[in-house]
Image 1 (cartoon, rainbow, N blue to C red):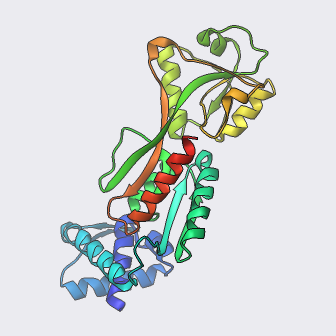
Image 2 (image 1 turned 135 degrees about the vertical axis):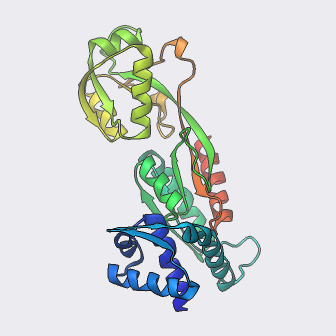
Image 3 (image 1 turned 180 degrees about the vertical axis):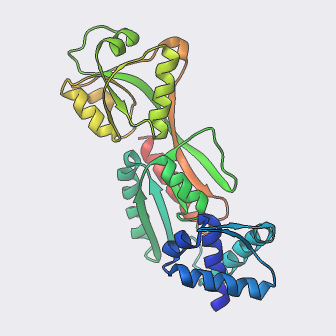
Length: 293
């Protein structure tokens, strides 16, 4: 079984790009990872890495070997697990979600878990960019994230729903012209390091608006709370978890017609080859049904 452990460490090094980062991921010391990789290279009779300082990039031989080792490990995990009864989910997986999706996801997963006692699901929250990177690296199996034009090889993204972007103000702000409102009131900006914040920034530039930035925050709920208290105005997606027709302490205005429909697209990103695709399909289907209610 040592060779299988070495192969798992090899995959971790390939994904993380250094022995030290891979050591943190697999729970070993950097020296132990280095020894394992030397042993693996001896086993296969060829060097697999280009080593430069802390970095350990796969050379041509390592890149050729990586997909075969990943397939071998996947096959081993598949034959090691007992075959479940038809329709029964067993095993473990990790699913990530942006903050605005986590409450619904937790409900979906808890119901699924109550129906399938042999299923273990770990939930993690984070920014879309962080979660997408973790899916791409194989650190988590799937994640509910904001969709982007960038497609990552080896992953699949499926749309769950679209949230329209709107100008949001307290009821006390007069007028219906979005440009005038954004130019003449303090602007509460959503974090530009996140996909949604960057999208909002692009929208403002298309509108020709350079707002008076008052604060920049990394939580949509905090931005909305400040708008409620009359601190300023903002541009945000209308979260699907909020019943906006019942909201009386916020006013939402459409963006200018010439921009066309502007939405934040939220969906599930997952690796094409992960072992629990039947489970993620069930999560996607149930989440989609709840979001449509």
